[in-house]
Length: 439
Ligand code: DLL
Image (cartoon, rainbow, N blue to C red):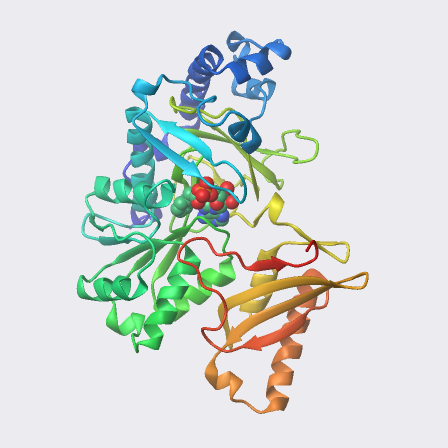
């Protein structure tokens, strides 16, 4: 079997010859710019200020003539200022709450929803999921895009869907077992919580469940976390990426080669920019991911700045797909912690911690200030067996963890070994950082 056969697909668009793909993107970009210019006053004003007209877009490179869009634009134009289609054509809202204030609002036309569903189908097929699978959708249903996004994609593929939403962990475990669920879709941190609660009840995922795949996303998670999840449960853990502003899950997904996330670029045109200068960066260089929604009509986004950090790979993927790949999201620009003047991303800490065997994949980062000095404390769960070791062995483990952390981030940390099940869990996205400095 060739590698491209092994790596399932439902769309020939994944494999279009590159020239054809670029021509399709350009035609779609031109149509999109005309649509947005005609219907979104904010973008029209910004294009007019730059003296850019839709007809100036004659090549894909001309995308750089267009203004960026930001989350703050969605907030400022709340609720419907960025809608480019009349309300009678909008059939569904989705919102993302963010941390403060008003949510951002996205409107979907029937065509937007069809395209989104199709992208999630392509993402799930890429994971090797088929109509023979039973899919437990444990992302939240409602304004969040995770539940309904995965739901319609899995149904579109012909899978049997268990639309359970997030929470109610006991029932999740019972139905997963009794229904012979083969695919779980939720945040990686909620899956870890399910496994953890299952273990408390004596459930061994390898022995007692039929689960083969996890479709995990909506929050950053490292390769080290993927490795822990797979070793703990025997499933294959796939990475699905997306954001409300662009549609929801199904913007990109990893294939069986795991060389980054394939972006469905016939619908979502990716760019990488330097977040400080806003200049486009060449493929291969790390920067902020920017997307243009080539085919959306309800709330289309031109050059939307995601705040997610990544790089576009230059090497083609052995699966044969011509749609490009970008590196898994390591961090968001707004996740960066500055500790004693050093820039640190939580994912670096996760990688260092999880490289050590006796550590469980549950941790929390605390930052505080003593006098003028930033203090970093990391609480990490270890197995009950490890905790019952003598003081000397525990001391050794703490020192090992401390060295691993220092080696990666170059800042010393106090390590606290915590009992299993003692740190916060989440039914959705988990916040693993408490910064007490500003309080
Ligand atoms: O989290 C959509 C989604 C639902 C994606 C289910 C995947 C699965 P928002 O709530 O708008 O939408 O959050 C979007 O979450 O900008 C990233 O920072 C982060 N994110 C999403 N997927 C991943 C991923 C959904 N696979 C924000 N890896 C994005 C890392 C991710 N971060």
